Image (cartoon, helix red, strand yellow):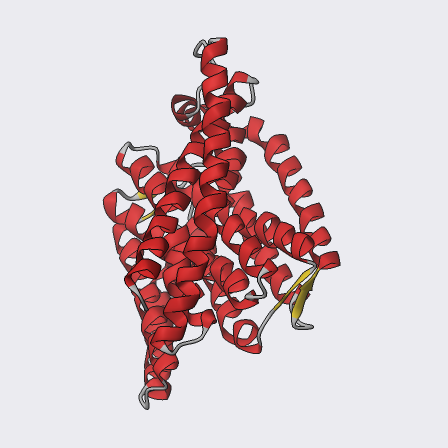
Length: 362
């Protein structure tokens, strides 16, 4: 691999991150100027904006015939969003889950993750499947707007501080926000082929599949905007935003990104390996949120560390699989046993809360 390819890959990543930031900031301000609820902005506009790198990469990869990158990018990002971003955010500050809508969205996230597996059973996300995902996205947006008014005052105030619709905005400011949005889209358009081209080159040089590259390098790169958004929200004490961003973005990744990419490209092929291993891991990560959020209290630092540990096991397994290491089978069995044992305290806590009637607490 020549130095030019590496530089273009890094430059493409920079354009993706910078473009997503400009896109989110411009879209948030325009939405606020249109008097859209700050809570709705946080759960939809921000989630969609931070998912824009995945959208750009998935569309470009699907159109170029690199379906493994298109699908692996989304599956890998969804796994990383839960296990790494929520894990790191919880390590920074325990994440109290007061947001009622989050506890509605978690089952939705699990549902759309399972839906993705179902539409992929024939080995392809067809254009018709993409339209189904798009229709589900419209339903999700309706649910968000319908139930956002039922949130507690404290949660609404948290979103209002971050995405206030009350501050005055001059016409010159609106024009600047539109320019930011356009510049963000342009940066994504420019940086995407450099980034995806570099990822393909890495796969060829390292002698691994595009699937492995997309689940590791590509998904980590495209998830950086979400990592920054959620960790900064946690540092500022906006813990509902940190959790809501992750859950909302995972839903958008499946319904919007894969839905749009499959419609635009005419369909995306799904490999047996992705269907047999990667997608079940994505569904398992989504289900893992349910007992943590079900307690209605917090994602503790211990649970955040547990999430990061799961992701480390997943990455090690991928690397052993990519290199065909002889210890892969043994490691897989040990990792599975460790995960089962580590889940026992969490399951016991859920059972204890259900018995004491605290499972529905705020």
